[in-house]
Image 1: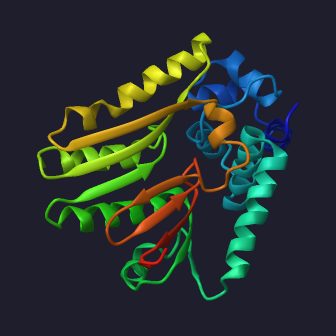
Image 2 (image 1 turned 180 degrees about the vertical axis):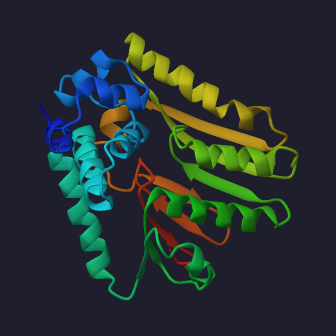
Length: 254
């Protein structure tokens, strides 16, 4: 059993919903759902957890608890709470910073151009920040985008591919870590990275990739809180690997 499966089993019992019924509503295999509920399998993505929460008709509060339980199970309890503590520390060290959350992000876009350093919570908010920086940089002659991140960050790569598709004057400088293990699963990861980078490789922009080999899992997903970086002439975003948290700044000295 896991923290997630314990929480899910509790909700299934509360709703008095048979596992096969839940599987049917979710459009999933019954045996797979049984394994998820009893902790021998973990949902492959947060989207699957969202689908289960919706099928169980959970309240917003219970939905958030189930999602949190999934994130804890995904990265490990120690790492999850360590990240929360460090993020809280960042906010407490800079009380003058504004923290942008899901509900009021769209109405506070002016904060991005204010020059103030912002702590960002929520993947949609991080993506919004990246989009604004990309759009702003794309308006400059000979735009340059610099990034340290893995290609799992599909939103960022798709946005860059759109804005750089026909821009021969545009330059993208990318630092990426490739998996050093020769095991089949890890080796497949490198091929997946190359596949996700293809739109930029095919575009007209100057896509300059620098790579090195390391154990990706230990390098990016264990102890590093904000290892990803996206940099333009006028702004910078540091991000967690899951894009759930970030710090945006437009301060030149940073």
